[in-house]
Amino acid sequence: MLNKIFIMGRLTRDPELRRTQTGTPVASFSLAVDRDFKDKSTGERATDFIDVVAWRQTAEFVTRYFTKGRMAVVEGRLQIRDWTDKEGNKRRSAEVVADNIYFGDSKRDGDSGYASGGYGQDRGYSAPPASAPADPFGGYSAPPADGDQFSALSTDDGNLPF
Image (tube, rainbow, N blue to C red; front, side, top):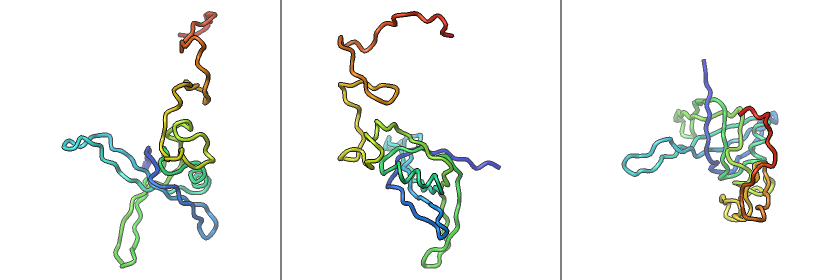
């Protein structure tokens, strides 16, 4: 049997960390996940709000580094729970139990540092400054003095396989 799920979306709220009676950390949050197709009448994509539960180190990780609006990729399994509400009615809930959680956006897309817990004053996402092109290794480099974004290689490495 196989029960494996991958979802990618934005957190709808900050993860909530709790502990069981034995002290095991458990975090719960939900992801807003857009559907792959558009509604024919409105032309808009529908969004599903999927509940996620993470345990132990994964729970502590998601609580420490993720906040509302942050893009996350969750790998886990689908779990269906049967429960009884306060009025005695039988209910059923579906949730994803996370095995791994990955960043779905770059640090630069969301924030200047994870420890601040926010994404600027409006808690939104902003593009990098236009005056500084992005460095593929995580920082910003100054643009070349002549304004050209590209330069010729000074030597030919004939050992390249392509």
